[in-house]
Length: 111
Length: 117
Image (cartoon, rainbow over all chains, first blue to last red; front, side, top):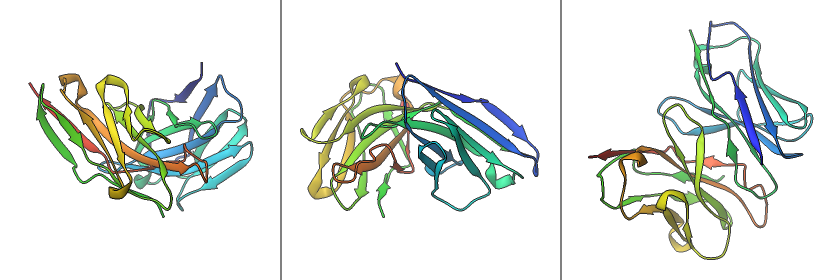
């Protein structure tokens, strides 16, 4: 069966520091991969999605970037964090015309 | 652009009472529709989905939802709520049979459900 791993679960980082969140999927090949952010009091906002290695689409302009170095690995990064980057980050995967399957999320607090 | 509206931010029901959470969407074609549930600090779990066919769909934990094309709605229902149902519920719209992309989702802002014992 397919599983999705996302780490770390929680992270506290100072303003201006770099960020790297990793997400990996097991048990499937060539998945669609997604990064969502959930800010306090708001719904889930799609940040990036990828349909294949090296293929990244950004949905909103921001201080973050994403990369997909391997088929089942999706990384969310920032060179310098801002206070506004705080939130709950969720990685998800899906097949062709399937629902999305979510990881357990990373709570990021920028201080 | 597609959008999802969940008009109720908070809902409180008594245990054993019935529940209906509202969801309206805007999309160019008949979309794929989903309801997800999120417990505090956790990821999202799929409750049910509508891709095509019968407009009344059954999900896990006794939930069901009805797709009404004429009203652009996909309301979630449960006949008898349990205390463990307290969580945040998200309605989402994805692609369609025409466009594919069922898992590139646009979410509503969520409805927080509180269950009184």
